[in-house]
Length: 248
Image (cartoon, rainbow, N blue to C red; front, side, top):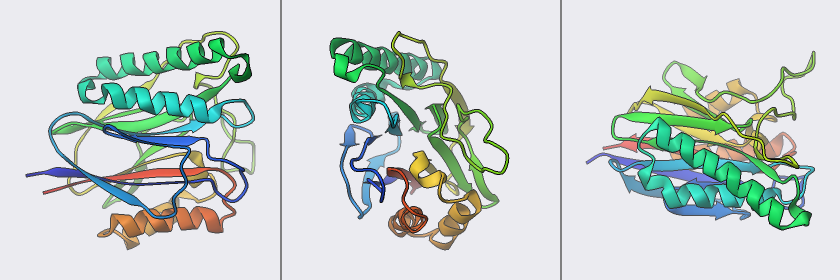
């Protein structure tokens, strides 16, 4: 029988004073929690399995509230996300939920979050994102980005930018989103990494690829070393990641 493993970790980093990231894996959520030890969950391959990270927008109130609302909503409907249409509808519901919560509490005005993840189906992967959190495929030929960043080009001489052009919530007035959705075949030889920019901003893609290759047979060790690389690069932001693999 084929199964899906999800190895996850979430940490504040070395600069932020609290964790505004959240994570969902099937019915399980991790919100505002800090762990240096990766946790691995195992699910049967068959019913839709949603795995995603959400990164509350820094510099605005309630980022942790927005990210938690998003992953809890995805956890609630995850088993029904069997098509691009269902997934698009779910992300629109998340966007409405974030704006509605902000509208009920003036202290949460303009709160917002990014989201990026996958829905694992028996033979395919639905990839989705809003914002600049990423989904990457670790393949025998190297690391390949599956998500599409909602970011302007970085300034000359810089590899990254902190600006985003789209988010769930994030404005004073409701703004609809156009989620990025893609379908890719599910591969037993690939692993999939969903992560916030607290990992990908400080750690270049070639370094991520090298770590994933070095620890190709141990997802727990790979997740730990990815987190460690972000910390050793200064840990400038919250770090949340989920490493997804299919076994039999």
